[in-house]
Image (cartoon, rainbow, N blue to C red; front, top):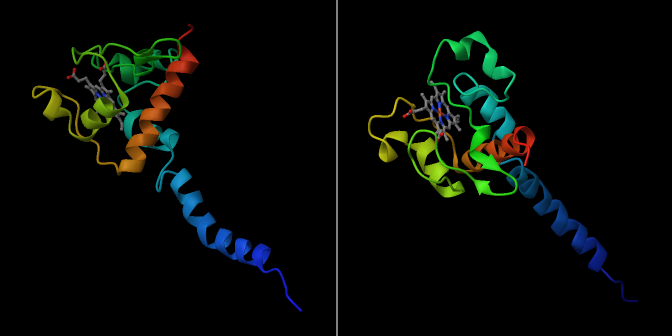
Length: 133
Ligand code: HEC
């Protein structure tokens, strides 16, 4: 008597693959929101309301990042003279700001590739949230 083993094999394959996929979707590290809150929020407000907080008022270089993306138009011009942003250029800047602007006061934030991708996606999300198109 022949048994059809396909469902069992499929299940075994899925069990082997799923944990890896879940990790990749997680960014293989921290989520964009967590990266932003723990590594960027110190210097970059995440909403127009937050901008009024004294810690940002105290430093005039606290650049809001949600202004950099609009759902209808995509990436906008940099406020610090770095031209039009793209996902790739922004990842390059966050990884090593001085490479793009030698006299910048932004410090490099060490993140892995997945976290870089996640945080850039989160900056777009902030743009969608706070820029009315
Ligand atoms: C210690 C403070 C500090 C932290 C932490 C910080 N930044 Fe910055 N960032 C700055 C400053 C200051 C500037 C403006 C630099 C300049 O004028 O050259 C800047 C500029 C930027 C710009 C360019 C803005 C524009 O209008 O073009 C981006 C993008 C950016 N930061 C992303 C991030 C991200 C993402 C994180 C977290 C992973 C982060 N920064 C963490 C201080 C910080």
